[in-house]
Image 1 (cartoon, rainbow, N blue to C red):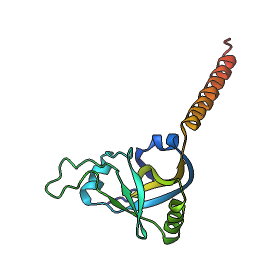
Image 2: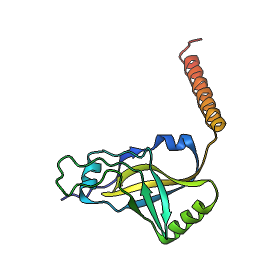
Image 3: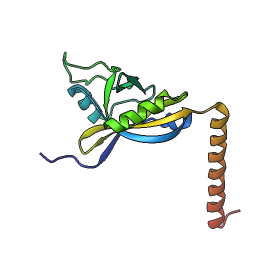
Length: 158
């Protein structure tokens, strides 16, 4: 059997970059059951309400939704169960120290297969205020209008 290579995206958490100032990004493995992996291979997952929490000296992913595998039997998994994250000890300690600071959260940014293994990209970040979100939206819109004006000028328009 041919071994899978490369990175195959499954789910993105686009709202995370809108709601948080992402400071640091780390890749972590996941402890999954068989039907969860089969469901992920079909591209079915949601990171919308997901977050990482520290329990003891371990990091757990909560709120991630992986729908039940439709061809599964009584061995099917719970869609929103808590899943353990696999990290190197130094990365784990770094994330735990970051979470202990006031206002810092660990948010999953994306879920993907890397060389056949399910991985999640975690970001540490501080929540944005409403005015920060509006300002980022205004900057993005202004740069989009500037690009549009440049492309119109190149085409010989206005």
